[in-house]
Image (cartoon, rainbow, N blue to C red; front, side, top):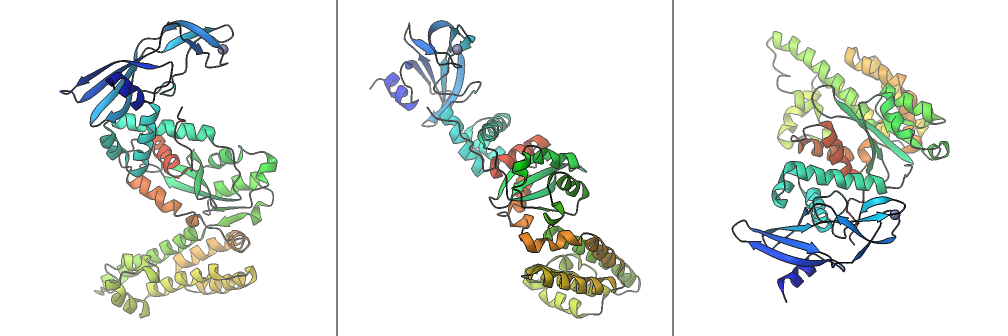
Length: 410
Ligand SMILES: [Zn+2]
């Protein structure tokens, strides 16, 4: 088999395209393949598929293809142009690459697999492309996926804010809690951020949304009320966020108590910060004895922690009525604790009681969606190299959007 014939097969070229010339440079570790078509070949207008004679050729272009053994492989061609009576002078479609790509379709497919399996820097290294090229391929995959994605209305929506960069830079992430996919990402965490998601849907589609899990963040609640009928029964304040408020309150109690004790030379609480942040079942074994002792003490912090942990049971009730009763008792205990941070947190929860109790109608939580939160966090951590918010958004869509990222193969 002549090497031109071999490369026609390796490149998956179909008539009228054929390999004209192959050049191997051992010193550079690369193979260059020139592709051509016979004279008088007719090509289709890319807009209307009318077969037309070649009008002229664009300047020669180069595409990176899958390596041949360990040799970087490049395909070269001058794309033919046709002149369509209706659409003017247009470049014919090339079977090996999507328009404007500098990579062949087969290379893009490989790149998407590699990018899906490791971080961008490692993928760039493995694929022997630059960091910017790797991002470009990721962007293209996401753009392709978003364009092809049918508009689906999630029955259970999760809304969450994510820190995107330094300081107060946030994005709003909207997920489908049943599918475990990220459906929509917007800048910042304003009412308008979430409006953008709801505004994609018709009034009829919005009726299909049964519940929205969120933090007690007024702009999100306002947006939901503006778009959904009966929103008060559809907004579910997320249990992990609620527990987070209580955990913060416990920490505040600990800080001030520790200050008082330490001033009197008592070091009971010194270095105990992280013990109080764990839930009882997640405490590392080597810490269990010390923590058991602290919990059993008459420290204010121990009392605050017990109140916090007690709220956890609220979500295990089967019926709303029992949950409501439980909350009432808990609220009484918390507000009579004489612990200011706990009293404040309890009052905040009380003001949002409807959104707590609506949990029993829907039983949804943001943390449930196949660990979406921790996966976004992992993307963020592995993304110290993300130079900007747009990259962070692209990576979330790429890994968690449930998108069809591949280009179509001929
Ligand atoms: Zn045409």
